[in-house]
Amino acid sequence: MPDAPRPVTMDKIVSLCKRRGFVFPGSEIYGGLANAWDYGPMGVELKRNVKEAWWRDVVRRREDVVGLEAAIMMNPAVWEASGHLAGFTDPLVECRACHHRFRADHVESSTCPDCGGELGDARQFNLMLKTFLGPVEDTASAVYMRPETAQGMFVNFLNVQTATRKKLPFGIAQIGKSFRNEITPGNFIFRTREFEQMEMEFFVQPGEDDEWHDYWIRERLDWYVRHGVREENLRLRPHDADELSHYSKATTDIEYLFPWGWAEMEGIANRTDFDLRQHSQHSGARLSYFDNDTNEHVTPYVIEPASGVDRAALAFLVDAYDEEEVGGEAAGAGAGETRVVLRLHPRIAPVQAAVLPLSRNARLTPLARDLFAGLVDDGRWRVEYDDAQSIGRRYRRFDEVGAPLCITVDFQSLDDNQVTIRDRDTLLQERVGIPDLSSALADRLG
Ligand code: GAP
Image 1 (tube, rainbow, N blue to C red):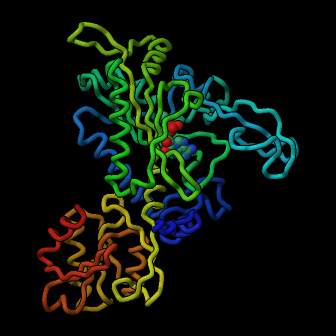
Image 2 (cartoon, rainbow, N blue to C red):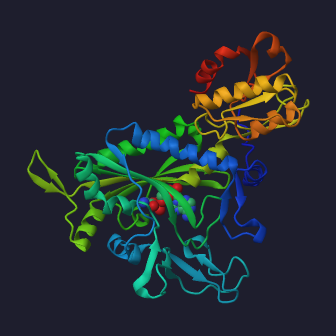
Image 3 (cartoon, protein in one colour):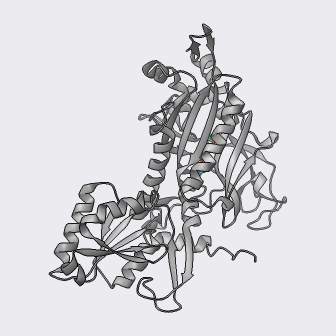
């Protein structure tokens, strides 16, 4: 039997994100700013969880990777050396009639997709955003907003290696904002001009680079699966030679099946020794590694898993989105109604457990508040308290933000010192003694 079509569409995701406080249009009360988005209370938690999950697995749990946080604005010489000033461009065409601009490789003919006018010749357009430091707007004070976090790791290679005495292979990781003056941003938070990256430069002995490239492709693909993304919605796509970045010997993208089709979520590149060599030449610093075994200086090769926080967050949301026709008290829906639920992995979900007294009541409230305070103090979980509206509406709200568990405090709780744990996915409800609640949560949330 063929699989049922996925219920998710971008319209549904955008609307859920606004309704439940994940993502709002940027500067909305002023009419917005094209393709700028603000993360609301749920979105900011979701993003933090994505970053924490990445940092935990790529940095904290490994002895061979350390962290870094470099400045967004760097000496302009960095971008000269890295090749971004000359080569970080997209081909741009402009309509002679309406003057709208498009990426040449995104339009299929020589006519304007907006007005049908004639498109001019393609020219290269640099994607770096420029600004000025200090009170004078002249070339001497021009700086660029970094288009990738990676260069922070390359220019600090010696600092980090000297400070940590790390031996090859080792990596330097960073999470932070990057900026690109994209010609055609779009698809919600998929392609924006301001976005956040999670990147790691893994320095290896030349000759061991192909093996490490394969290792990181597998490891990164596996990371998404471990965090709940369905395998059938993920694929690897090696780049053709003519689409490789100027620094890359080989790149494989991890693509996700978004509602509009397959698209890049992360790229894992073999950057060779390109960046360290370029910075050595341009800065005069010797960015190499002294190998005590061979008594030789080597310029390491670099394997770079580079992913986008916003894209990963979107993929998690899209993959988790589900609708089902269910009825009954546990579903918080009437018979035949549709329940919208985000089946997010507990590590990614913005809220992990919601404490819900059955109603606002002089006897229930103190017990529920006490229980909530205990879970907050415990510090292991992201918990929310909610006593507004009917229990059914509250279940629906927490399903829509992907909370794996709801803990209901009812009148029976006052007598038997037990609460009900409702499972988001199975809708099963189980009575658990309040003294056992922490271990019950640990079992279910990991
Ligand atoms: N340092 C290598 C590098 O930046 P990239 O493939 O251009 O490589 C890496 O970017 C990741 O950053 C992408 O896979 C994507 O997840 C994210 N990314 C790039 N441009 C983006 C944009 N305009 N909006 C949102 N995310 C973006």
